[in-house]
Length: 344
Ligand code: SAM
Ligand code: SF4
Image 1 (tube, rainbow, N blue to C red):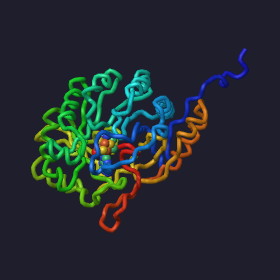
Image 2: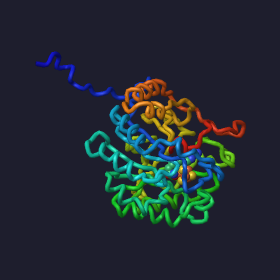
Image 3: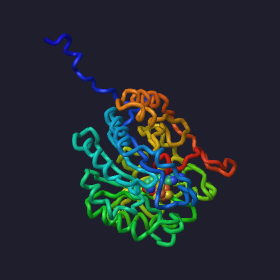
Image 4: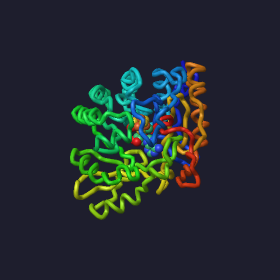
């Protein structure tokens, strides 16, 4: 006879909660710092990438993501650098898809520059991915080359087509760049909405050293919105995708437009997100330096006890928010790491 029946009950681990009562349900994981593009606001032309041994292996990435899923993460976004250039990356999507199948995870998704989608879209759909974000800042092939330095516009458009054909819902992410694509925002909206895709505009954030001054790139979305309102009827929506975007419906196109405004309107108060870099550093806030190393506990033992302790201690330090500033006097990035390191 059993001595104490409660002793054999495996207790469900507590969900992760930060000091401000925000439940951590959204994890973004960067699987590589490398990329086949060199977007001017994201990377410098001549980037030094990490040695391969510093990166988490695909097995370690699976273990790490699964540890977060066990602690209540419901949405997992794979990003980078360019996630789809990592060798054998489909193995990771394949193994993580078990969490979708058993209902632990609500959504597994990816942010990509689109260059590899002709190759991978169908497989992604097969693994249960329903929606993806594709970053595209212009519909002008020459401008595309100027912004991405190395990108192939035709390949990205073909990738978007392949994704839609595979049944993936595509959302377009566009970084609003002063004097570069600001005259194209309406064209991008009409193109995306014409194909049934949402479009989200993003303000440039001061992350990492690049060649240009941030202040020369920064276009406040409050200005873009005011301009759009002269032409379109915008209605605020309650619609949320778990991320920081705030959406409006444009009556004339019938489509949804999102605004991510870390600079002009701080989006921190409802932040339920944390990020892990490709080397296993956990960042509790995109705009702060504090981080916790998860690679050491992952490599130290096959059991997750130490890993869980480090994660808990880190979440207990999640700050209220960031304090990004872009101006001429402060010509230094808010944080030294590029977006491609922390993962967009
Ligand atoms: N390579 C993939 C892509 O471009 O979608 C995923 C990684 S990328 C770092 C993720 C997103 O971050 C992209 O939409 C990109 O435009 C955005 N991004 C990169 N650097 C940024 C910055 N300094 N400010 C705002 N957004 C940035
Ligand atoms: Fe690469 Fe994405 Fe950064 Fe562009 S934004 S350089 S595609 S990681």
